[in-house]
Image 1: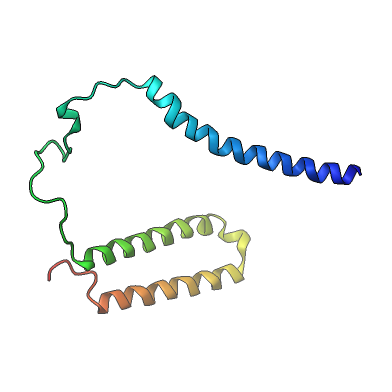
Image 2 (image 1 turned 180 degrees about the vertical axis):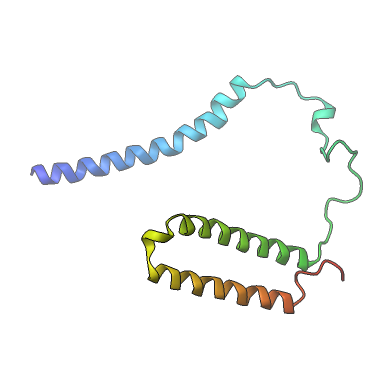
Length: 126
């Protein structure tokens, strides 16, 4: 019976944690936010801000897919850098297996870079 009560108690803590995890951010944003921030709307505050320049043209502009591919490559190599830093910091403790794994990882990234280079994703001009 005590084991059953303990399992139920763990589930109760999980449910309370989930409820608080949802209600606290929602309450902070929807209840406390409007009470604490000043609300003085006017026409200048309702306009679109584009670095201090008056907005012009249509908001729906088509971009070439190459820009998205360039951004995706940036994210991939940025994540690679984030992955390399902790590996390099603990290189001496990891050993030979981790070194081989990193060589394989870098090789796959170089293959992706060569592929992007051949597809001319890295060129900005048309």
